[in-house]
Each structure stands twice: as structure tokens, then as C-alpha cells.
Image (cartoon, rainbow, N blue to C red; front, side, top):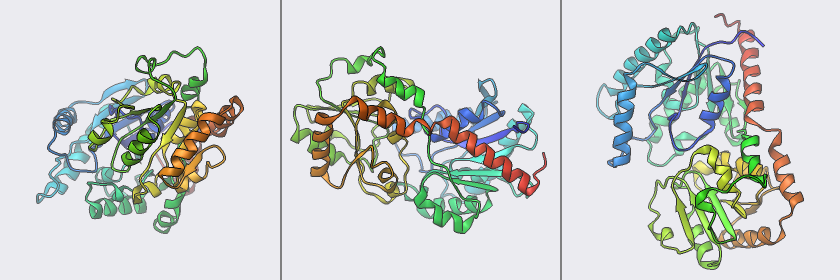
Length: 389
């Protein structure tokens, strides 16, 4: 292992309810490298909601604070950003002020010649024009296809960062061809999973989450964001077709859920601490990925798929290219009726052997292995270009 190098890591809100690949990768990098995690404002403009305004004011306050230590080799700060990007001069001001505050924080921590590691494209404003910088871009989505974003602006930022990255990683295989046209270093780096954490759902001694103890079985479970690409019409269809099932939806609703919430056998649960998810999953008789086939979904690599499989639970999912790769352990449905049929099947035919097969399918794809592989690739690239620290 080469000498650890400091990392300026630009990712999603460190204190967000959901733990994403951004967090998993950063945590493991920080085990061997000093790392400053830079909270980056979301790619969409804040909406006129109390939740968004509270988050905005919290981020502005954190932006002027010194980095907060959250681990032996890890600190967190917030990138200062004025959200009203449509106003003249705001982008330039954000770029200059962001670079200034991040460099100040790096000096405070004694970081010399850090590696820039990006997980979100709009953080690229922090990368100055110094040609000696070494930058990594771990592209996990087609960000411009997200609902509610300025697609042209995000596409431009994503393409620019893709071209400038010294080493490019891509989470979904469907994104590789377009990315490789812009950057020949594009390397497939699929998501990992915390095998030990989610595998604990198979432990007979693991206690159920309090909210799951009195649920009527069979329980059909979901955890993750509840967004525009979540097929709530499918959830309502399942609830009506099988009134004896309990459908549990765990996560923050970013869309109107009133129609589905009115179903007596659908239970919406607020976002749960990440380490509590196996305690909920233990109550699941089956887990689901109910996607609408939006453009963004076709390029996504759902982290929850591997987490579900690690729990051993049967999984029924809408078809996507990345989910198709797991068709040996996942029941894939093309429409609502097929989704219902697949759930009927797994609820009556599941076996301990099948549960072990699902866990085995993801056992070798832990986040530890994924990050170790990425670091090896980065170090090889450093040697290739003669990067000097």
C-alpha cells in the first residue's frame, strides 16, 4: 500500500436520512486516508417547503464553520453555495467562494496536494484550473434526468467533470459507452453492500424493530426514497388485490402519497437509522423495488437491491438493465399483474436454500472490496501519469 494521500471528497449531505454510495465509499476511504467530506447542496433548487428552508439555513450556517471531526481521519464541512443560481453572477460567486472556503479548510487540516474525489457533478465548481490536480469522478447516475433539475446545466457540469477527471468510475454499465467517449479511463465500479449489517437479518436472535413487531403477515417491505420514480400506483394495485397483505414503505416521501396512504393495509414509516434497517427487513416476507420506467431509472444501479439480497429475503422488482443482471436471484416483473403473480409465487415457495443463495450472490461485493479495488485503480493511474505529491 502506498503512502496515504489526503482526499477532498464531494458528496451528498453527510447527515441525510438515507445512506447512499457517497457515504459508504467515503467511510471506507477514511479508514486509510485523511478525508474531508464536503457536503454539497442538492442538484435541484430549494422548494418553498419548511423542510427545504430548514435544510438551507442549516447548510448556510455550517458553511462558515470549521470542519467537524466525525472519525479518526475524517472531517465534514459544507460547501457554501447561494441557491438562486438563475441570478446574474451567482455561479461565479459560488465558484470563487466555494474554492476559497474549501482551500481554507484543507490548510486548516494540513492537507497537502489532496486528491479531489467527486460523487456529484455540480461540486465540480470546487476544482480550479491547476493542471497538476488529481481528480476522481465516481458517477453513480444520469443526474440530468432527475426530476426538478435544470437538465441542461447539470448535463454540462456532468460532461465537464467527466472530461476533466483524471480517473473516472461509473456505477451502471449502461452509462459506460457515453462516458468512455468523453474519458477513456471510464471504469465500471458497481455499488457494494454492507454484507455483515444486512446479513444480520437472517440471525434468529436479531430483535425486530419496535414498529415491525405487530405487523400482520405476510409483510411486503420497501426502504429507500419515495420519489417520482416510485410506482405508487403499483403499491395501490397490490394493496387492493391482496387486502390480507401488509405493505410497509420506509422512507421520506418526496411526492404526494395521500392516495396510497389511504389504503388500510399500506403503512408508511418515516426514514429509519441505517443500522436499524435489518431489524425492519427481518419482518419482511418479501422485499420490492417498484419502479416507474423513467429515463433516470434505466441508468440507475439500485443500492437497495444488494441490501435486500444480503438479508436473504425474496425480491420482486420492476425490470431495469442493472436488475436484469440478478435475474437468477430476483423475480422481475414487466407490469402490475406480473408483479402480483411474482409476489404470490415467492411468498409460497421460498426456502432456506434460496435465502442462502441470495446472500451468497452479494457476499463477494462488499463495500470494502469495492473501495479497495477503486483505490488500487487510482494508485495505478497516479503511477501512470507520474503524479507527484
